[in-house]
Length: 142
Image 1 (cartoon, rainbow, N blue to C red):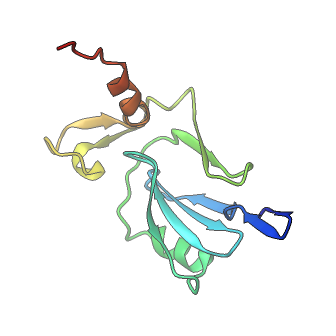
Image 2: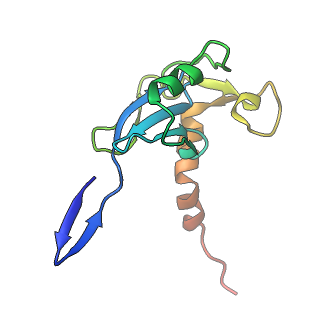
């Protein structure tokens, strides 16, 4: 972690992501930070951390458990790449396949018809820009 000392005070930065793995469902990512703590991230609907694991749980063991064949799998194209070059989890949509990956609404936890197919790239962009869209609505003058 980054630390800057100034007149006896220490400002500590957050731990950097050092390892990551996109799970076979292509909607979850397991990360390990420089403190050795692991976290599970859900790409959809909002790219949020859904679980932080205890310090005693090892990355390799968690990865084997979360990626095992009995786990629920959604077969779709690789629609993004994940990186931690900056120390933070980064997602980049693949231009050629971001809008080809689809999943059933029921698998994604979206209320509605079970047979309804949802475009994963479109869902991610809609979630990212949802608050911006709300701010762009004209305010009604009273």
